[in-house]
Length: 131
Image 1 (cartoon, rainbow, N blue to C red):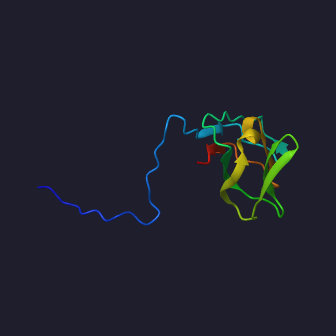
Image 2 (cartoon, rainbow, N blue to C red):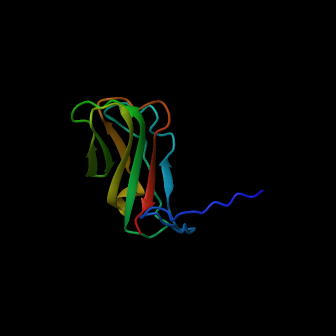
Image 3 (cartoon, rainbow, N blue to C red):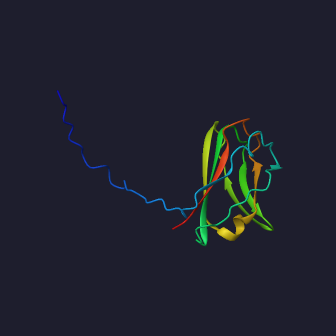
């Protein structure tokens, strides 16, 4: 006996995105952030912009963390830095830096200014070109 399921349309905003060989989504810090101490810079992170897009999005995922008041996460390249402020509740975080120039990401650092050390595993950075 076969059961027939009638599918409903997916919710508004659902879509398919084609992923091309030059799509360019890259994990640039697989384990380089694990155990990153407060007020410490990561190892150098590098993004080779195969897509040719001038801007990118940087997603930082951090496992449970308890920031102090005024805690931030920064990405730094040369004399330029971008910063996102954190709230003080304990939780895993996904930070999203948008409209970052791809040239900034050729070699950059993540700086932990959260007031807490990063957990020992499960933290990473993904860079994706903005189309």
